[in-house]
Amino acid sequence: MKIETLAVHAGHTIDPATGAVSAPIYLSTTFERDVEGTYSRGFMYTRNNNPNREALERGVSLLEGGEAAAAFGSGTAAVMALFQALAPGDHVLAHVDAYYGTSRLLREIFLRWGLEADFIDMSNLEEVKKALRPQTKLAWAETPSNPLLKIVDLAAVAEIVHGAGALCVCDNTWAPVLQRPFELGSDLILHSTTKYFGGHCDVAGGIVVAKKDSEFFQRVRAIQYSGGAVPSPFDCWLILRGMRTLPWRMRAHSENGIKVAEFLAKHRKVERVHYPGLRSHPGYEIAQRQMSIRSTGAQDGLFGGMLSFQVNGGGEAAMSVAAKTKIFTRATSLGGVESLIEHRASIEGPGTTSPENLLRLSIGLENADDLIEDLDQALE
Ligand SMILES: *Cc1c(COP(=O)(O)O)cnc(C)c1O
Image (cartoon, rainbow, N blue to C red; front, side, top):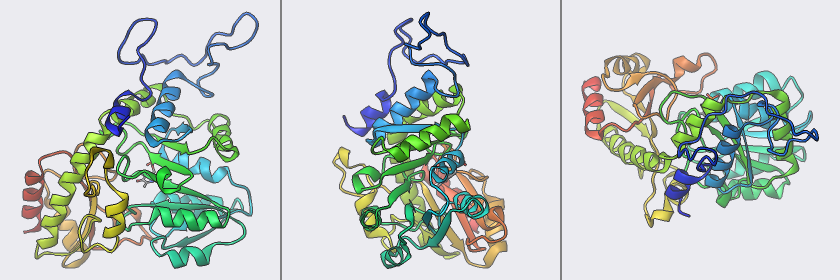
């Protein structure tokens, strides 16, 4: 099946009891035991498993082409489970431009628990080779990265990392559907489903998808139900509902994204635009290969709805642009139908690598002309 068809149907079944086309939400925390003491229907206690969570996990693993998935109450809880599945002394290779919360987890929690980590620029393959150690167990690739939209060559990184006997994780939060990490060699995929999967800024969640139902994934699964950072049945239902329109939304986000990026690139008050769909972007060629919906026959890349740009005149000038937008809402997060604008440096605080004059945009599903007009008046 093509990706649009999978997105609509994966994880969904007609309810056998009632014929309901949209799945019921199973709020029950506990499930009946058979007279013999077994659980023939497969459910025992909602932290261990729940029909809505099982449907979500099945749906997302089918969409990504994996064998198994484990859903969590937030993207960060899913990241946490991947690190907890490692052991003290293991070494993690992470992207210097990785999601701020991911590097903070490594630095503030897992270093104290005995993990070792190096933060390198994964778009530079020589750096990846040099940073590998005999203890390296996991490499964390994130592309496009936050907030500079750097592009990591997933296939090349996976090959290098596998050569050293380590696993490769791709945080695919920013480009679901557009990027097929398992086809490019990644072993595990992480999504913050709070973003594009949910798609409407109204539900938090995260998921780990495994290409193979390996021993490592079984540790993640055990952390999910023993650790208990599980999503509620309603949240699972909302995320699976959001997934039904995901390929079409990603296409529309990308169409708007390139239009806004091209407008900003020509604007005299803009110093620099970071968007992998612009030919001037250093990762353009890799992105053109690695980001698209090829099943539609499209030869061109689709580069997603995230971009950032630097305003002439420094931090204050950037803040004043964000203060003047009318359609873009000043808020963090991304991936919803509504466009957001964010001054990253002040959100991340001390230690941020984000330039002071940088604004990050999550391009929504409004008409691109309205978004461009809004940015134009805010930049004046
Ligand atoms: C938001 C985000 C996360 C964390 O997800 P939460 O749902 O906020 O916990 C992880 N990685 C990326 C790339 C993100 O954008």
